[in-house]
Image (cartoon, rainbow, N blue to C red; front, side, top):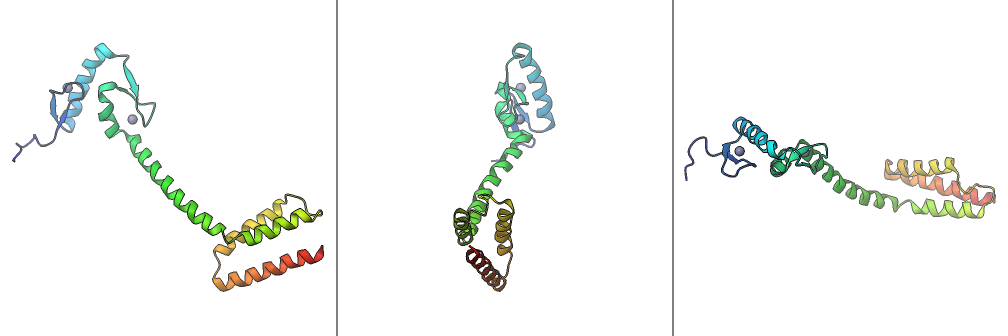
Length: 160
Ligand SMILES: [Zn+2]
Ligand SMILES: [Zn+2]
């Protein structure tokens, strides 16, 4: 099945299926010519590129444009991070699971203790710091950190 040289890379012209043109520069030149002919009678018939609404293309070129549209890459890249973020969301929720022992204790204290405002940004920040620093700690450090936390929370309860 030997294809004659120069014919292995033929592209079909979107404006006329009979036009089989060598891909590359020759096809670009041909396309411009056929496009110009088409626009003589269909100048107002333009459609929006699905990847970028500022790309106005002639209807016959839709498929061709979608294959080569520079914004298609951006859309492809955009789809992948969504999968990544869902995964990291699961990872994140896994990390959050070790937090509630602090959260529940603190929230109970706030509800019962009238001297502490219902929402304390300072305390909220501390709590977030606990989560973050806990994740970056060695197991031994984490254990010591938690013991300190239990002491601190115990002190709060005793003061009431
Ligand atoms: Zn053509
Ligand atoms: Zn486009």
